[in-house]
Image (cartoon, rainbow, N blue to C red; front, side, top):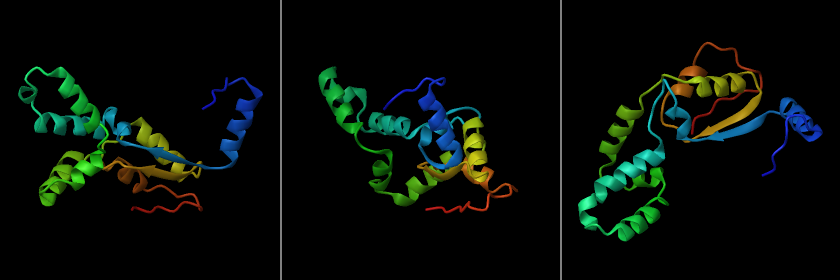
Length: 151
């Protein structure tokens, strides 16, 4: 990654290109961490699952073992934990109950506004909340090139 000073000629060229050609934004659950949305991230969820599966008492003060196991566990994606849950109906209910939030924050609003006016061509997210759904379902006039598709 290369950093540019805003006053540099290269920066002006990059900003000009961004303004001319819409771009793709990829973002994760951390966007919903900020108020008023205030949701935990997938990483926080994974940490809580670790604590449930491996209470401190099983390590018997073996900090090295705990640290090693946690290090490996941190490689497990949040979505994989959900897929491996033995009771899929229960996990669906937990996700729906916890993430049924539509109180968007300024980041959601900024992304949605720029998507709707065509400055951003695509929004790709792993989010489970309803913040973007709320904003994109609002009575906005879509830019002619905008297509909304949920996967």
